[in-house]
Length: 89
Image (cartoon, rainbow, N blue to C red; front, side):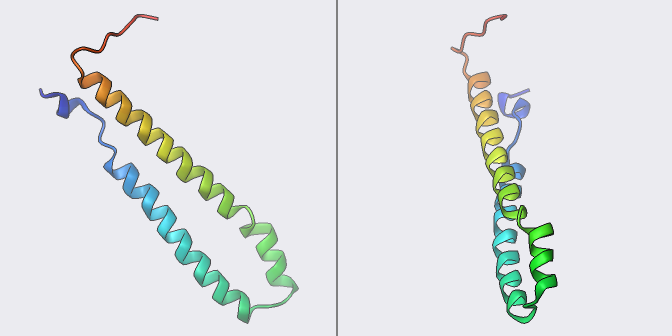
């Protein structure tokens, strides 16, 4: 078994992070178009109750995915380095 076989592949996580970002940009564009046609109090209430936290939540999710992927990449590099010393802490 090669060290590559035992690595956790992060490609799908990176793809997912990119897809979230791309889809949110598209959603924002569509919502902006919708807002011009739906300009009443109900739209404002809907936006406040259901959409106002969506952007920040997706930003936190993509940041967490990015950080998780970085940690996995670091672990993969360290695990494949024959000179890396591990302690039993």
